[in-house]
Length: 328
Image (cartoon, rainbow, N blue to C red; front, side):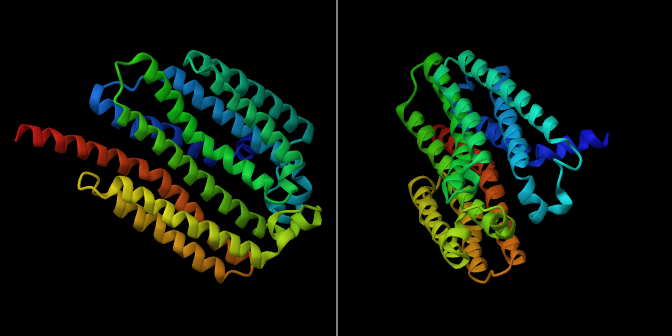
């Protein structure tokens, strides 16, 4: 039982839940509202989408295992009480588990994309497999490249979830309103950009937290290369950039009376916390201080995912207003 729990901890079940939650929020809070309220049709069948989602979870689980496999020396310093590989699990067993999970994830990913008639999308899983392996082995210890790669991988999760469903709908449904397709595309890229930037900021903050162990291992992460002060400035700059980008979305899609809650939600629960990240990071000096910044970023990522509920409600509200206007 102890060994089983060690493997569960190794694959980060909470992080995997967030990935699964994101993929299904995409399905039920974006595709269903934009598609279902018009046609009662969300296109891609449940089993194919479940396999597609499972492949993401397996690739991510494999990524966590191989990352910890190569990080044992660093984690002895940064997380001595949370060390799993080398204490609870033999390195050779961890590596074997990584290969089994990752290859199984690749097979399922290719199968689900072929079944959804979007075969080229399967190369995303190949990108995940190669990218996470190279990241764990080499890029994690380099300046910024590793942070960017991880951020791209997380940004691809909602983007791929929207794309595989929208492409299936385009191929198999009645003529689609171009406005509907454009809305899906803009929203997909907007969500992906949010996931990319918020992850990138958090990765830099985590590197600042782990600077002691990373320096001991000879890594060249952002804070080691340019210093903590400059890293803080980069965190503040990226956080500041996100605020007007979100403002653009608010102006383009949320300023009409038919989207009443989106603008307020984004302002209160995403933009305001981003300001708190800027303020807290300017006052942060110790690893304990940066843990507070990291918690704010976790909150922002959570509220970002939870925005899907608000979006679904606003679309529902919009459609019902149209019905009421027609009846008048």
